[in-house]
Length: 517
Ligand code: MSP
Image (cartoon, rainbow, N blue to C red; front, side, top):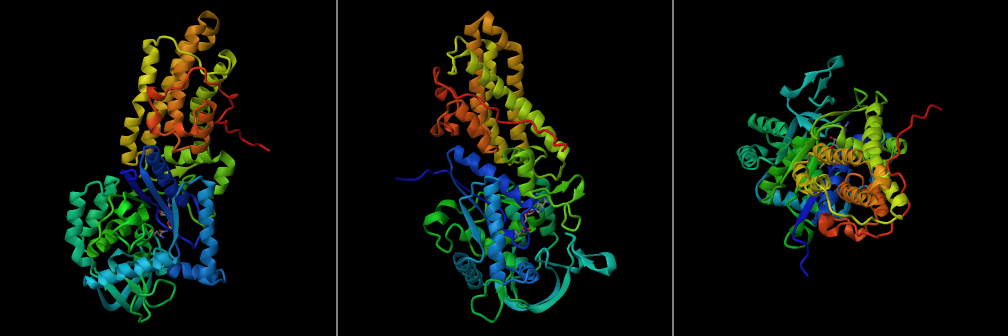
């Protein structure tokens, strides 16, 4: 039987294992998780990939500092990233590690392919290198830092490196890249980032050093001579490895490549939007459809850094506010693509006013009234008034609007569109005052409660990608079976069946109460 034809392949960057997971890692993967869940619920066959980037000088140094062999060290830290996936309820289909056999095979194959196409030549590199970024910089990009140290635009310290190296003919790809950006305006989002990349490429591209000899922790260059492959060429190839490359004629590569979306932070856009498509074009492989560069978080207005001691640990946030609350906040608080500031106050405001008050109360009020006044079963609606119809028309139109927002990764706008409906529903409750109808007009009360329950069913289905656990609990309370929770089950055709017996309602979104103890 043929599988579903709509496929969606989405990737996170693979994370350096020099550090424990922090809010930045959680943020990138969360954005991908929400898109992956959205697409699955919308009928796509999704592959969602994350993993760890385990080679290079930076990881080797961290292993050394921890007094461990690189492999033992990466085994340990990589596990922390898998734990992060479980903690935040990420639904990735695969977790790749660059130290895996399948990855060595893919990277070396891609290397040979580039050699065969005359894209790589031997030479020697003399220039600046920042271990923190694992990146080369030209003299012109540097500034002077404290103590006269040379500093890269990222803020990382650079060191002078001289060693034999293979080069990739990046300079040959300048015009093709510019043409590619021009023809594919959706390749780099947000738009402001596209301009940034375009001007970088227009400024001229130098050939790129793609092997190192100063240390050993990496994938060997095929053909020996003691070179290892530059960690970014190694790392970027993970997106191909995970779909079975070098096998290209069948299997996952045939189904999923090119990737629909590489999600990255703004700091690593250049690697994904310049080097990666150039490598792929040079290897005559299809290029990904989009790279989205999101912004960075600060903590209570300050840059997050280990030396400032203000690193935000995802496990602390989840413990304090709850997993779905954290997922909601991170994607609601700032327009995706912009930088954002984390503050306890902002978090509490969102949790209490939007989750507990707006959405939580709407569900709790409605379900409690049904429980008490309708024999704990979905009530039978009578004729719908204009007000009822307007409420339902609003939620029936939501999926179309959301698809448009999610297509361009506008998470905060998608959530805002949903909250407009939630607020509309709260206005409807106030106008209709079902608690009064209980005595005045019980039949009308049933119709009002039915319209509200249907509204909540829609909202809980549509919000699943953002808050999977809470929405599942809400759908349980509405008696919606697990097989009826995909987007195809929205709409009047799958409306709640009157008479369905409902469990005793329980609040799903508690208020955050300050612990003054
Ligand atoms: N290993 C490379 C990626 C290779 S992909 C082929 C790498 N790893 S990383 O561990 O440094 O990646 C970190 C990811 O977390 C990046 O997307 C980065 O933008 C993101 N963040 C790190 N700190 C961040 C914040 N303070 N805020 C938001 N995201 C940040 O780069």
